Image 1 (cartoon, rainbow, N blue to C red):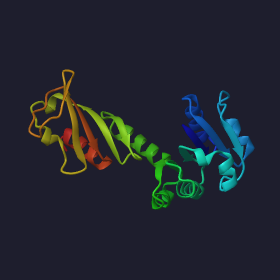
Image 2: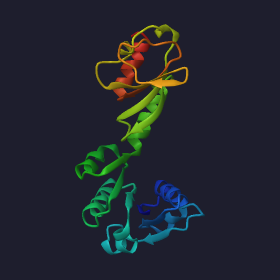
Image 3: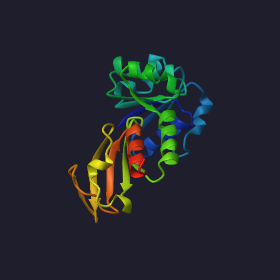
Length: 216
C-alpha cells in the first residue's frame, strides 16, 4: 500500500514508522526539515520537505499513486484543506485527518472527511477509566462516541433479567458469555454470577448501566 503522511511531529512520525514497519511504501511530508528527526532510525521511506499545500510537492510525494493519506499536523485548518484536496483533486481513496483542537472538529466533518480526534478520544478514555474502573473497554468506534464494554456480573445481580440491566436508550447487548460459551441473549434471559456481558453503548448509556448495577 502507498501511503502519504502529512506532518512529521511526534504523532506523524510514529504513524509513518508503524506503517513502514508493516511493509507499506510511505512518504512523509513536512515544512520543517528538523521534524524528520522524529522518525524511527529504521525508517527508509520517502522524506519530502516543503509546502504541504503545494500540488507539485504532493505529486512529488506520489499522491497520484497513493492508496491513502493521513493529514496529522497540529493545524486543524491545514489538515482539513489537505484532506479535501487529496480526496477531491487527486481522488485518493482513503483519506483520514487528525483533529487537534476539539472546537475545530466540525470543520473536518463539514468536508465529509474521516476524522480522528485524539484529544477528545483520549480525554473520554481517561474519564471512562477513572469513572468506570469496573468496566473494561474492548472496542472503540469513531472517536469513542460508541464503545463496546466488558462487564462481569456481580453476585447481587444473580437471577436478574438482561433487560433489567439495560437503560431505555444508548445501549444494547452484544453478547453474553457463561462458562466460556458465548450467546446472543434474549432480553428476558436471567443473569448468573460471573457472567461476562459485552455491551455496545454511548458514554451516557454505560453510565446509566453503572448506576443500575450500583442500585441507584
